[in-house]
Image 1 (cartoon, one colour):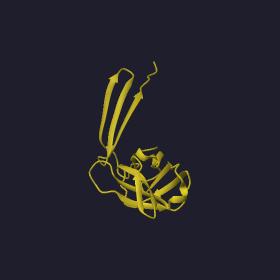
Image 2: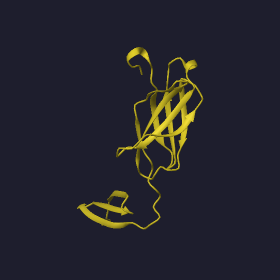
Image 3: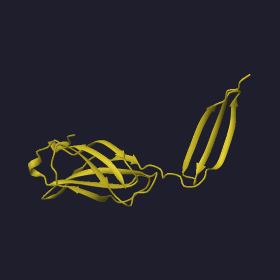
Image 4: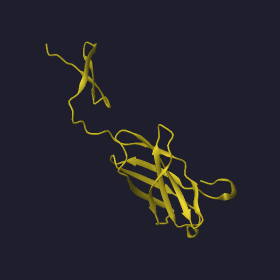
Amino acid sequence: MYISGHQEIPEIIAIKSLSRTETMLKWSFHDDLKQYEGFTVQLKPANYEAKWISVSHYSIMKTESTEIVHHELLRHYTQYNFRVIVVNHRGDSFNSLPARVRTPSEIPGDPPNSVQIRLLNATLISLHWRVRDIVHWHLLCSVFSQR
């Protein structure tokens, strides 16, 4: 991705949450790699104003890189913005556009609550429930009777 003055910025081309603490991030950067020292990955929660936190630095200089970013402070079922910055001896370059990912929900350890069953028609029911007011489930079931 080029910006004015033909200086390139990194581009995030894939992002995937692997667990609460690990995110796979793939980016590309096609400028002259000899003049750069590495990449810095930053994150911040997506739903409110917060400062960007540098979580990883990579000295590997490739035109395309896939890395697993590990950070212990990430919370379950929360959206985060990630961005990549190229670093050289003068400091940081322009950053990539942010990419958003949601960490997975925690495996429920408590029983479901607020269970609701609704009859939709003669052969279909709807089942809703919650676990810890975080995970909302919805299930449609077909009901068949033998005569």
